[in-house]
Amino acid sequence: MPQTVAAKLRSAPAKPLKRPARAQTREAVLKAAEKQFRAKGFHAVSLDGIAKAARLTKGAVYSNFQGKDDLLLAVLETHVRLSVERFSAARAGKGGATIEALATSLAKAAVEDAPWSACLAEFALHASRRPRIAKALAAVREKGRRQVIEMLRPIVDDGAASPERLERAALLFFALANGLTIERLSDPEQVTVELYRDALTRLLRP
Image (cartoon, rainbow, N blue to C red; front, top):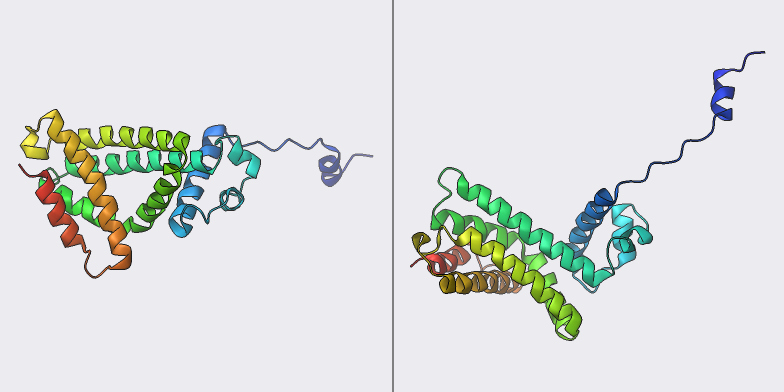
């Protein structure tokens, strides 16, 4: 007697579930981690919570990152790279190659990024008491400065800035962004987009 379709399906061997590629898993963890860090800060976030938000196991998180410190460093590196790419693309567009346009774009992004800056400040304090993590954080930030220098090179002093001037501009760029965004958390009425834009314009002009 011929088998019914349902019987054939029941007797057929189950196909193994296809596991997501390592790169996809890493990307999912990074996205979930950034959202968690923004919402809760560094210390309040757990790897269990990140894994749950990414719909993965805690083992999947550990297979890509050594721990929460390593994960935040990876999020920071990705965040800086994507931000620089976004600003560089905006600068290449119509009307974007001026100091005023770049400063306005950066100011708006920095104001929106205040929760991330607060998390980064929390992590920087945490890292300062742990030499290995402090060294890793310094390396990530140095890489970020290199990227920002290339973004600023055509603009600072109308493209004629010396290497020393670009180094200082990149360092002050991060200091200004982190400082003002943290100030905004406690006094949003005073720390406005206009204030940040004016400060950046002064920094970047000859």
